[in-house]
Length: 448
Image (cartoon, rainbow, N blue to C red):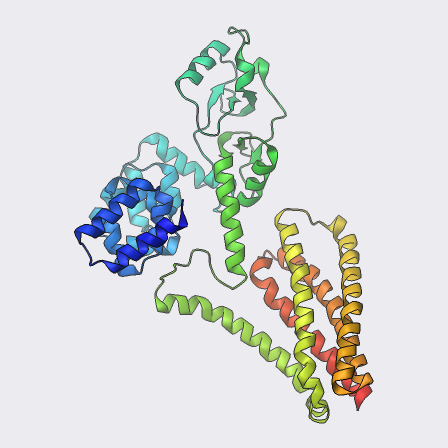
């Protein structure tokens, strides 16, 4: 996809009058040249009124596919404008996987009506998926892998392969007569083998697998690291229920990366670019409130040293330097640890050496920049003692920032709180308070 295509299409659609022939031509051309993914991005780039006008001109045959690719806030805004009859006509005949993608934005009664019109196979797939939580791989896996009984003859298997090979398929999964996992056979082993043998005689029993209750993002990482195009998803009882392929794994990893970027600002990745003012205000007000509380906490600690600040005004001038250095140093460590937690690289066994390493880095950086800042401050205010005070405060704050950068995300992870969402706010509060207390405390002891 070329980003300029969306940019140009948005400009053309916004510049033209609604329902004009030229607008319809733009939409038809864009639809012809792009996939549902790009169409979803185009719709999300338009204000709600223009979005609904564009939606009405998109071909009915791809509307469901476009909704699947849209963020939930954006798709919900469109679905909310459609009447029940229109919705039922649009969703009748969809597959279980599509319904799973959209179930959070569809009314419950509509889901029941759509399910009632599904064939038994699709109903069963939906039912199996509902046995798992939204964050478990069993809920989202592809239920159409290439599966055959282990006793199948190779000549039968090769005939099946000539008919069709699923995307991301280079192995066939084997099951027993109850559907339990038996292993996998690579396609290249089938060709040239005795056609009268059973495929089970070529099985790779140690083929990597996923547990249906695995976290979906951890499972995606396992697929990416496995060097396989897809991994089977198996229940605790050994039942093969589907697979997670490389294509979906890549999309999940991209989704997680976007989620973490948005979370650092306290935003939900599903928030629509053109959400209503009320909804956007509500989403952001909560996070602003949390930041306000932490700011008041830091200000309260500063207020404890009001008398010191009144007598040594230079301390107030230099306070932002102390807070800034600690904040940056802590953010560097925090980012490193959050990434390590996401990749499963951090455990109780390696936490101590990691802590030792980060404290040493903090101490060396602290001493280095304490000398630089201390010398500049001493010269600026003609006070060696003031330079010493800020130098000691810088060392202490950068070391404490390193400690907080490790412990804050680890503790949040223990309490099942996303460290990418809350870590930066807590870290900033810790480094601000530590820096102010040490700096102003030393100022009180050494300068008054």
